[in-house]
Amino acid sequence: MTDPKAFLTSIFNAAVAAADPEKTIRNHLPAKPKGRTIVIGAGKGSAQMAAAFERVWD
Figure 1: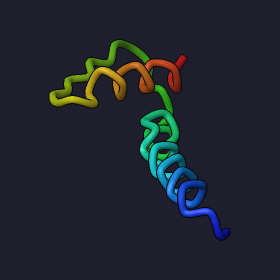
Figure 2: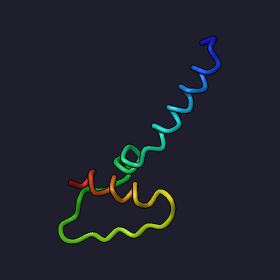
Figure 3: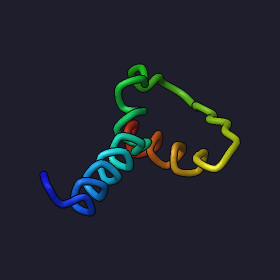
Figure 4: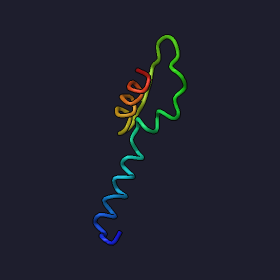
């Protein structure tokens, strides 16, 4: 790849994709238990991670 802008764009896009909470959480969650589950989070990414958590277990 000789175009620096295209190269930087591609590695930026790869980094953003690797940080997608749904992709990372999916590999680390156990099977959905019976009953109620409470998820507590704090920080900038907690809302996105909680939403990904719900999508994976639905």
